[in-house]
Image (tube, rainbow, N blue to C red; front, side, top):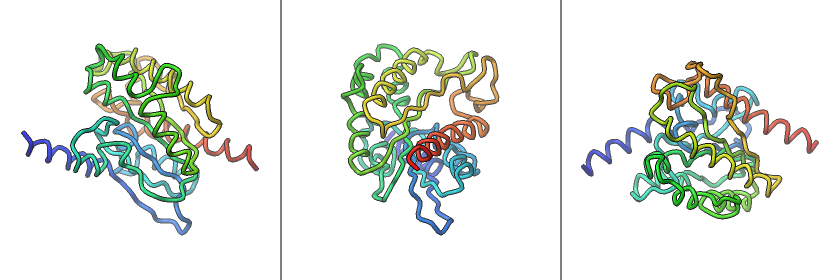
Length: 231
């Protein structure tokens, strides 16, 4: 069983970690999180790639498939399956962050999840693992874009039961963002038209290349508009 876990962790790391810099200017945007950000990294169609194309600058992507905030294994956790350990030192103007879905889906099966959600983020958005982590990122001088829950297209999906939990996480993260002008919440409510499967992969869990592109464009627009207001 332990060997299977090691092999699975290695596969997820290889599938999700796509750190690349190609332009002359140093990267100033870091992305961290789980498969919603990491998927399509190998084909150049991840959320980070969409941000790169939209803004015309490099993005360092440290997101990993299957990553969680509560992850107990030390080696694979240090390699990225623990979202908080994906961070690398740098002069990051922006950190794009998602996560928590795997903690809910795998941690409590989207059933009795109040305790786990409260551990991640309190109802007022002020306490918990996510606010604490965001506070650490802000203390390092970065603005933070928190990407919310991606809804299913209204058809049967393995995570359909997680809808209420995802909505509640969104409400709490929106409250967190209102506490600090340097924290921005991107809701994906309305991104997926009802009955439209084209925004998801065949598993109806992860974004398709089209879905990732649309998410990345929205992230880039937050960065662009925020920086334009400061000029």
